Image (cartoon, rainbow, N blue to C red; front, side):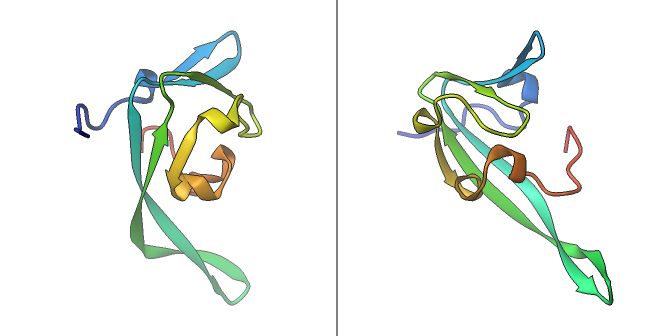
Amino acid sequence: MLAIVKTKIPDSDYVKRQEGHVFLEFKDILQVNYPKFYYELKGKEFVKRTDKSILSSFLHSDGESFEVSKEGNITMPDQLINEGDFSKNKIENMLPLDYQLGD
């Protein structure tokens, strides 16, 4: 059985920072929904489109803790199961170009 137990949680609930290191740590499945704006080439410039798509991904950690490097790599990548858009890229490429912390 799968149930939503919390929504719109702050990153402090699943991201831990210790001595310059960043860890991804959560007990259950983490669903991440975020808006993505696509860009199109107009003349010689990339212009952000006004319409957006809502993308959704799931992370399954089995309660493990994963260190995330500045390059977006994680320790034990075979232990973190990604579904949805996150499964297509490394963490560094998951967020939109215009992402701001707190979005």
